[in-house]
Length: 303
Image: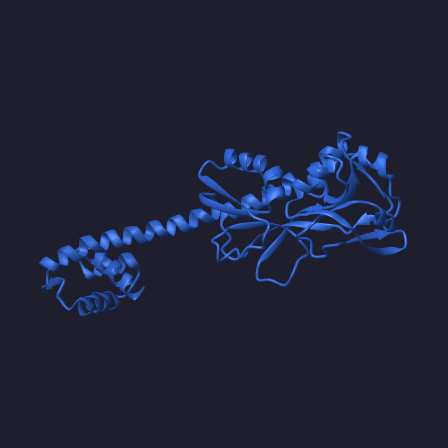
């Protein structure tokens, strides 16, 4: 930075035609201006200016250094301006990670709206159900559906992730409708393989929390696949409403055990730091929160 300052002082000396003029323009003392030019000459090991009592002139090397210094100063100013604009105006490439099912079903329209509002931003969506390292993988934002853990990431809640127990009417007509968690022992269940409590479903009931071990006729690492299996009559599924809300609303799936609510989770937008937060990240997270909110559209399927 000292060398950059010295280049800037040197360029002003040449531009103003004198040390005094550069000192006045840059609000420095003449001695400080002279010192910067001297430091630059010592660093380069050559004289840049011919000095007389009346005027200064550039040496051959000085003329070359002057032209290059102007380009360097211009480039640095462009970097500074670009950085300042990135904090106030969304620009550049935005890399977003999200779970496969949630991203495929619900982020397309949000991203389309974002691109329409912010034409200077391009978006890359990375869909993956594993917990990725945001910094290591060069991501700007990660959408996660999980309990919060201690982390150096900033987390903003963008929506609730409620779950329901449901099945097709055909299956329930054949096998009966469970009214309490223990009834699930007599049913074919469809279980999400990446659930932390795999093989055990937890509920908040009239008398507190209840956990029940289920018999999984089918497990899968993808929620959409389990939903489709439930639609096909394969069994009962414990599934987020963002996956099955539309099927419940249309009558393709029916909820059971209304007095026992699966333990709710939250959907978060995670990003590295609030400090120096870019406008593209801030605007995208704000849009996510506004689009979904506390009453997301997938929950509008009745009682």
